[in-house]
Length: 318
Image (cartoon, rainbow, N blue to C red; front, side):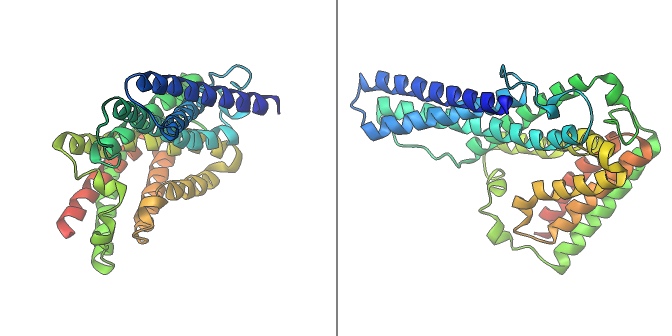
C-alpha cells in the first residue's frame, strides 16, 4: 500500500510538472502573439500527458523512490515476474510511443501559437512510424534492462524455467524454416477460403504505416521483420514463459503465453478473425521450439520468416 500511494504521488508530481512546463512555454508564446485561454489550457493538458508518459517509464524502469521495487520487478523468475515481463513490455511500448506523439503535438502546437501556422495532421505515416519506432526502441531498452537484472545464469538456462537466450543446434533452425513455410501455406489457404476485405482494412493505422515515403516504409519493414519478432519472443517466450512455467509448468506457460499473444494481436486481427488461427499457431510453434531445443532463437527465426512470408503472401493474393 505504501508503494501504491508513493506511485500515485509521483504521478501527480509528473503531471503537474509537465502542465507547469507547458504553461510557461505558452506564456512565452503569448508575449509575441495573443493566445486564447482555451489554447493555454490545452497546452497544459498536453504537458500533463507528457508527464504521465514519463512517470510510467520511470515506474517500469524502477526509478521512483518509494515505489521502485514492486515484487514483480525483482530479479527472480516467478509468476508475477513472468506476467510483468509481458505486460511491462506492452506498457513501456505504449508509453514510449505516446511520449513521441505527445511531444510532437506539443511542439507543433507551440509553433502554431508563435507563427499562426495551420495545424498539421498527427495521423500521417511519419508520425505513426515515429511512434512505433519510439515504442519498440523503448521496449527494447526495457527488455535489455530486465534481462541484465535477471543475470547470465537465468538467461542461459534452457529449461522451461529459464529465459533460454542461448544458441540452438542447426536442426532447430531448419525446423523453424519448415514451420514458417507451413504457416505461410495456412495463411494462403485462409486467404483463398475466406478472402480478407482489403478495402475495409486500408484505413487501419497499420495499413497507413506503409503509405508514407520510402524511409518510413523501410523503417516499418525493419520493425516487422527484425525488431518486433526479437522483442516479442524475448517478452512472451523468454521472460514471460519462464516466469509462468515456474508456477504453472510448461503446459500452463504455453497456454497462457499463447492466449496473451493472441490478445496482444487482437486489435489488428479483429478485422480478419481467421487471422487468430495463424497467430495462435505461430505462438504454439515457438513454444514447441523453445521446449524441444532449450532456446528461443529458433522461435525468433520462425517469427521473422512468418512475418516476411506473410507480407509476400498478402501482396501476392491481394
